Image (tube, one colour):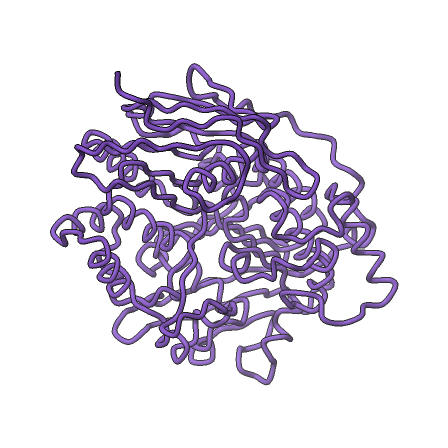
Length: 491
């Protein structure tokens, strides 16, 4: 009788004094493809890292690779976020660096990364092109890794994994940052490699999944609980939110009724055009939905508004009533704005405590490096209480589950009651209930007249307060929709 593929026995894991996994047992037989779900912080990622020996724990883990298979005798873990290094092996990047051409030259290109990966693993190049085409990634070969958006980084991770085709493939949050077409094509590719002998574990709370998934489980209270089928999340009722801090009840003090105005804005890297003749105006109090496929130019568009992109000076761009380049500094612009984005989350100082992370929003830094006055300390404490983070206030940001990290960063964006709130895919990695809660908070907090730009791929996971929509396709505006049409489409 053939021995089971993966055997996990009596697995225990503690972080500080908190038990994450408790005498967990799991047997994966040959031919089984698993979906592993569970709330944020339940231990899913830790379990995956234990399986591939990147996380220490007590207990036994054994993988019995098929010695007769031509597939690599390897277990590959695809992390939820992608990390990379420059040509000198350093990984200390800062947020604005991805838009600085001189710095970008120090970073390896997509082509070079894939070429090195192929040679390291002795992979056939003719099997790469179909995967690149499926993700619409063929045109990114000359792009530096630092230039890629979060969705494009996820695609690069998946391309490498699907090209390698290890005997065991574990993907953490496989759909994070992907547009609808890419999600669909990913499922097709996963079904294909499963037919060729690859077994996979998907860590996800999504429900649109590969057909070859045939086993389901969740982690609850530190143990693996087998399920008979996909557990469809039950939409939760609106929860009773706490009283909004007094300083957020007042409307922001607007310096101008015109928040953003772009006239024929163009952005290019060498011969590659990223944005083409963009005309867009955002007025005070409007709530905009920004959409577009991966690589459509959304992140670049937002970088112009946030003051991070150097090519803003070469375009007719007005921010908060002033033409860009009329004497204001990048920090003057950021004083008007609160921002969350996957890229900003990557570069944020994960060793800062929750309290320090929120307080840093007063100064638009990625950590707290100065003393703040008593009145501002009170505002930090109020937000910590409002978001239910009191017990975490002295913990490091990086030790928290992803859902709580996003709440901390949302609190950080609100600490100065900004004129403009930019939420770029703020719910990446959150489950449905966390997403609904997050968007309910956004609706409540924006009711004071704050201006909002919200980036999200899926209409079922958006705030209800949105009034306008801008859609990009290959760097061009293909839809600029007002309130009535937007609400009709969302309904």
